[in-house]
Length: 234
Image (cartoon, rainbow, N blue to C red):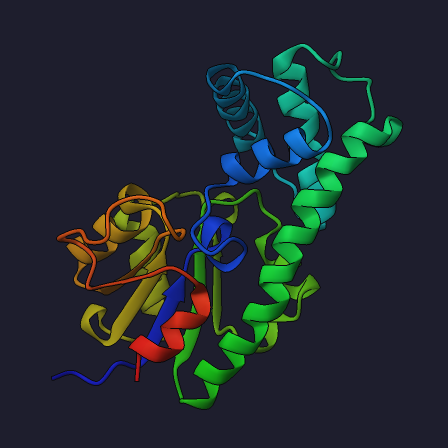
């Protein structure tokens, strides 16, 4: 058997959320802040905000600044703010949404810095491949993850996004490893697990506890918290 030499991670929903979809995290934040919106209407606003975000290059932005923009775009889509002049921090309710999402993500990222450190101590080469807004390296640096990462591929910077196999292949090339010598850890079947498996990588599918199926043909391993990767990989 080929000895595993590298591990690639998705970011959003994986390193920052233990498999929880960001739409669910935002929805919970709105509920806690006292905002009420039907699930279907919120999903449409979430998708509209993500599409609007996809056209922006946010190099240099912090995680909190990114979340503030996402919330503003969602609220514009819901008709709760007028574009583009309103500022997210103007109301306590809006700030509460951002605060909850930031703290939830930051808690995962601070914990997962230790996971990366332990994997690096096992002589793995590590990287992140994510559909992001140009500021993936900035956010990884913000939480000290860059201390343990050999490569960081941000779709906005690379000009190609998952599930396109080219972004996976670029990561392999920069790590100088073959597909079979690399694991991919991600939460999305369509954007992470299936395309990585098609390219020949072994896969770890992270599924939020109590959500989704327990198995999938493209997933070699299923986990529910990122630290579980320490138990399933040697």
